[in-house]
Length: 251
Picture 1: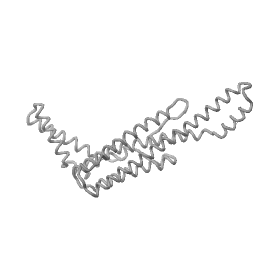
Picture 2 (picture 1 turned 180 degrees about the vertical axis):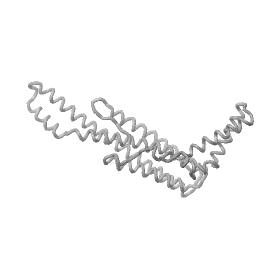
Picture 3 (picture 1 turned 60 degrees about the horizontal axis):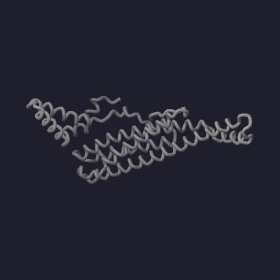
Picture 4 (picture 1 turned 30 degrees about the vertical axis):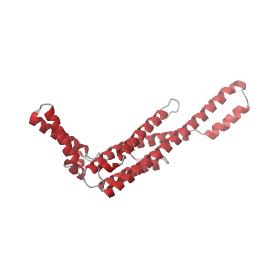
């Protein structure tokens, strides 16, 4: 596991110490210290505190803290989660091509938000994988054959209850199929949107635009994160539905 010292002594943190956003934060902290009546000492303390918060925000996360391992999953969830992880890596590569300054700072913050999206995607893929494993234990062909036989004998001798039970099993399988398909479709769409965000970041790294040229990229990333969180909540609720015997797992 990477130590805090190793993660602190990085170019990203070094750039943050003299970045415009850190300087602005220090000025704001000093102003707050003066406004609350603490005088020059309060201004210094406020400036240092605000500056430190901004610099610490630039410390890279421990790569082992986000345990996203697509290899733990079965296809198609493995491939889709790997695509999300690869997109996140390409985002970092694009940001590395942006010169130090406000734009790079903003993109670094978006990278932190994308980390949340990747973590949520891992949980969604893990829950989808669990549903798939559960669905694999339901032999619908055998159930259908048994149902056809039960229907042949009509309602005699409590046969109606047998038919109802078999129909309920098929209905459960159909619901699982529908949930897995809709989850796959939504996760695939969110992966495509992350790819689009990465492409726009690459464009910014080439043009070296200023923060005014983000063009809503920050809003798009926040939207992706929000929808990824909503999707994760939805599938975990489905996975924990009484009667399914399934529980969603994180990737």
